[in-house]
Image (cartoon, rainbow, N blue to C red; front, side, top):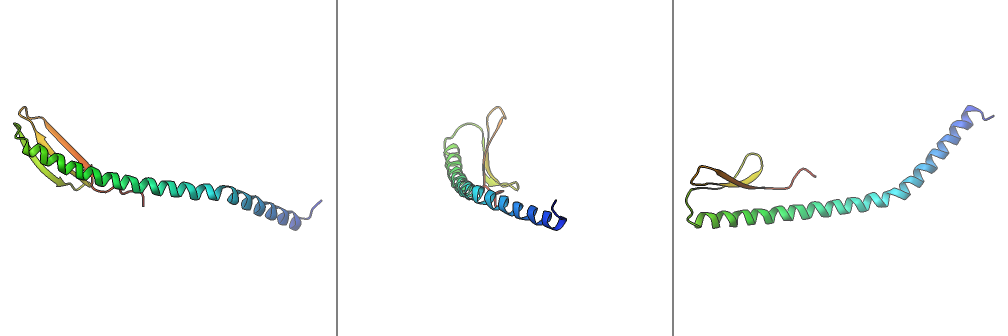
Length: 106
C-alpha cells in the first residue's frame, strides 16, 4: 500500500506526463488552425473591401441610368453598413448594402 504522500506524487507525475503528451500532440494542430483562421479573416476583410467598391460602382451606374423612380445616394449607416436605395415608380424600396468592415474577430 502506498502512503498518501507517495500516492499524491505518483498522480502528479502521471498528470504531468499526460499533459506533456497531449500538448505536444495537439499544439501544432491548434497553431495550424490559428494560421488558417487568420488567413480566412484576411480574405474576408479583402472581400468586404471589394464589395464596397462594387457597391459604389453599382450606385453610380443606377443613378446614371435615368430610370423612373427615386435614387438615394450611398451613405454609411450607424450600424456599420454602406448602403444605397432605389425607390421604383410603384413605391417599392430596393436597398443594397455591404458591411464597412468585417470586424468581430479581433
